[in-house]
Image (cartoon, rainbow, N blue to C red; front, side):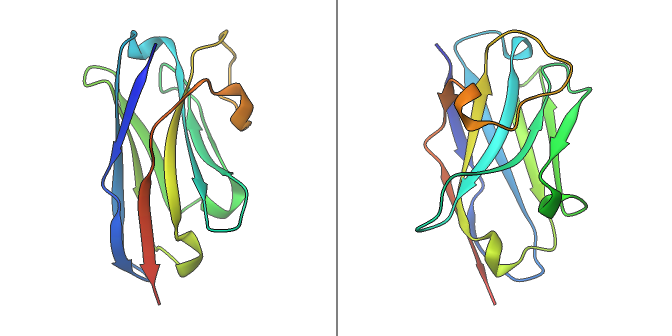
Length: 127
């Protein structure tokens, strides 16, 4: 079992920044990939970014490249999402997720691959 708890969401003006955190517990953190997804009202859950278990490999959705940065601290069992130059269309509930499955060179972009999810944190970007 893996428990995930997100924090750091809030209200920010367009162009601003937020840093989300996701604290993990229950299993050895360095043994699984981590991803961030988001879901806006009336829309499907959308991939944002993922990082491999060692942190050596990352995958970004095209619309987040250059604005969002994922990182992880395996000593603190925490993954971070630094979001800069935020836009109103970034407004959503952001979820972190853990993929405890077999190792691959790059982390997955597919929500169904992830087997543990946090409760989500709301990010609202005002125009």
